[in-house]
Amino acid sequence: MTATAPRPSNDDTDDVVLVPFANEHLEGALRLSREMSWPYRLEDWAFALELGRGFVLRNSAGAVIATAAWWAYGEDQASTGMIIVAKAAQGRGYGARLMDALLTAAHPRTITLNSTPEGQALYERRGFVRVGVIQQHQGIPAERHQAPPVSLVRAMAPSDIEAVMRLDRQATGWTRRQMLGRLIQVGEGNVLVRDGAPCGYAISRMFGRGHVIGPVVAESAADARALIEAALARLGQVFVRVDTDATSQLGDWLESIGLSQVSDATTMVKGTRPAAEGPARVFALANQSFN
Image (tube, rainbow, N blue to C red):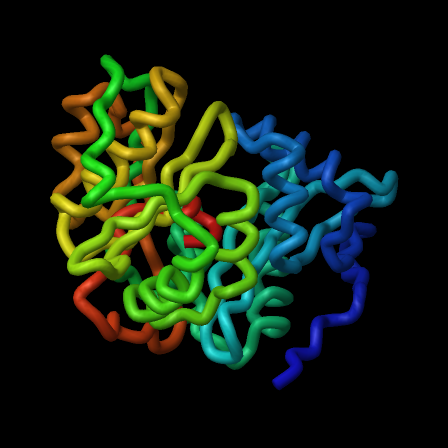
């Protein structure tokens, strides 16, 4: 299946043009995220665009005034995020214009996103429904962490990759080999082993103000905590972010080690989201855009 992207267009009512998101727009996108106090680096924008696609709105001077990106997970699923409209351009329907372009391009995939309170009404009008809450925890751990025994958690090896891909697909219902492959390349991975086989994994990488730990996929909160502790032991006392579902049973522990909850986002889905196929589930996200 090949989705047809909308052609660049101009509304009769303004001189703002919709164009595909390209590398030349990265600096403008970075300015927008800084205006919103989002901690993206230029490298984070470039990494997201490498793995996905999207649209920007440019004004008559060529400045980027809005962005939206999405990532395909096979032919049936996708996530979307990095949806920003400059403060001076808000209230003119630009967010709706971007979202409609994105939905057309991603059709007929089911789309998952994590919304700020300001965006929920826009998404609900387009058929998205609320399915959960993601809590953003971050900070510098209060003390150094001891790594779990290597008999339980060890560094991810090339021979683990297929097992990690399988675990992720079973936990999410998504096929995201390309994204996971790149996350593993740029980050540090661990696997939790039981009876000689991986039954959970975690990846940490540089992102935003420091490091993000995610995805974390495991069969229980205790296993997820062991994977996160392995990452923390390696990272030491640096700025760390973990985005976890409100039902993960990790929130109180993350607070206790110095990773305070600073915000939350509402998970919304348009279409049918697949159920987990195995005992493992997602305990932390790669980030709120990738899921």
